Amino acid sequence: MQFNSKKNIKADSLSDDLKFALDNPLYSDVKIKGNDGKEISAHLIILVARSEMFRLLIEMKDSTQNVIEFPEFSSKTLHVVLEYLYTGKVTEATLKIEIIAKAFHSADYFLLEPLKHQIIEFFTYYLTSHEDRINVSAKILSQLLKFMDTSNNELANSLCNIINSAPLKSIEYCNLNDKALNYILSKIEREESEEYSKSEYELLHYIILWAANEISEDAFSFYKSYLPSTEIIERFDSTFMQKWKGNFLYNMEESHAKYRSTMIKKTSSLIKYVNLRQIHPLVISNVIEPLNGIVDFKILIDTYRNQALLAEKYLIYREKLLVVKKAS
Image (tube, rainbow, N blue to C red; front, top):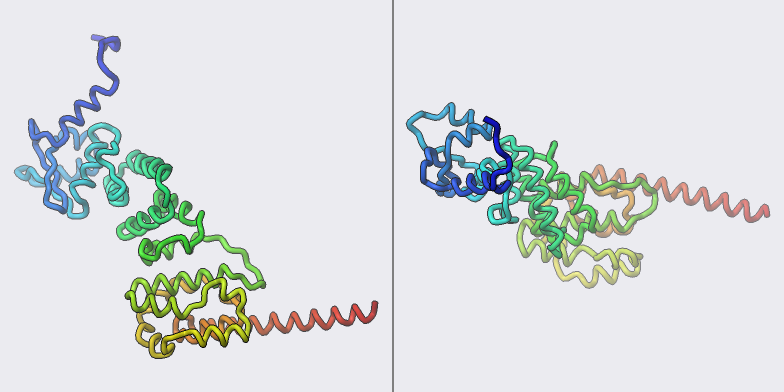
């Protein structure tokens, strides 16, 4: 018998009916339990038909067991997966911004590529109405990288592109963990140059204050007071240096020694992204070098050597220029 497509049935009626069946104990034959202890009523036939991962898990479980536990995910996160399996889509009522990282992780765990794309679309749409899209993206990236790596990770790539569209200093330190900061720094494209660049000092400045913020308020207060701002660096000469040192209220060596080992541990994987050769020699010798250990001594020696070579090139160029002027 041929199906009559002209019957008065809404296109979404099957999806709506299946959504009604989700978490409805009527005729339910299995419960999905999250790490928060909450259970969601479900139906084996739908789970097996819609998810290869669920099929395997159900085949392995004891036939008398009617609860499948997922210690990796909360019931809210699992509800996103189940709503997609039942209806083919997720709604704003289920998918909240607070769980988007975990939801994406769960979609990856259950091998649901279409759901991963829906989650990315949801997040993209969410950002259109949110003012601080950079900090929101940074926070979610940090959450995501706690339990996922970055290889073939579309959400991580999308978040990184959003974050790197703005200056690093616009991101609040508390919104980035070490994995997220490492990842976004690895994706920043830089041009090699022999000219001094304030952006390299800005990067170093951010890394040190981020690490200090991870330690304590006192550590952050010390390093924030110690490090000159970018505006000060732009006027940094020998005279201004003396004035800057005179305004510093802490005992530099004693205070840095207190946090030194922890600071080295937190910054060791990040300092490599800073091109110290593009930071002015006065800043290197008077600001960075006293932060004993944060920049490896061999790297400092290499930086000084390179800057000496540049100075020599400048002197040779200047002498040639004088010769040309005299000849003319």
